[in-house]
Length: 120
Length: 113
Image (cartoon, rainbow over all chains, first blue to last red; front, side, top):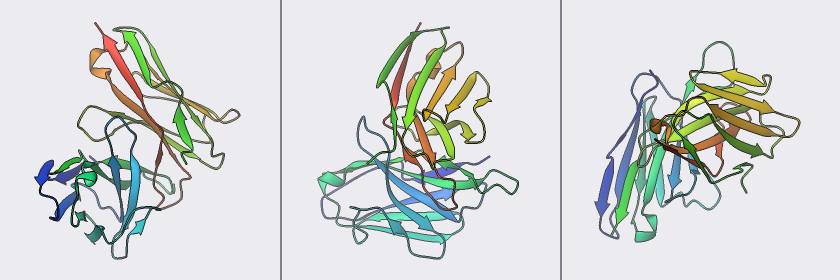
């Protein structure tokens, strides 16, 4: 259980185009999803928190007009990189928060397989 | 800045040895910790978690130890196998609904046969 998928797995685009990445929770509902970016040999850096039915919360330094997030349903969040540039090339990873059971407020996050974006 | 970090960027072990990967955190308010394994080109894979009201938790071949006094977290892997080769991250959050995880820098574990 707790499977998260991402599509596409990799994408190559020209500078100036927009790219949409989908994140789906396959066997559970996720009111909250998170988007991370990871550069080679570095750790995951949180970009934004996506909440179903409301606006995303962006981390400091992340341009909300450039990285558009839409959490349309309890199983789908999308990240659109608008007017992509070579410096946006990175590994984008989403995670979904799953309830661990019981009345605990603590919840485990499960990650998607990531999307490799290369902007030429 | 980061509130979670790892002591060593790389760790090399022989197959069959036990591995210990360490992590220091600085946020004393953190009450939930997770270890993830990330293989090249893939997303992080959940290994084991622990809450701050515990100091030890065991899984299959893995044990997580939490020392809140010195704010230290460790992952022990028994009988390390070549398939364990990956980057290991510790992550923390304060457990409040909706909060994201803060990741450490990662330790690359290399297992030789």
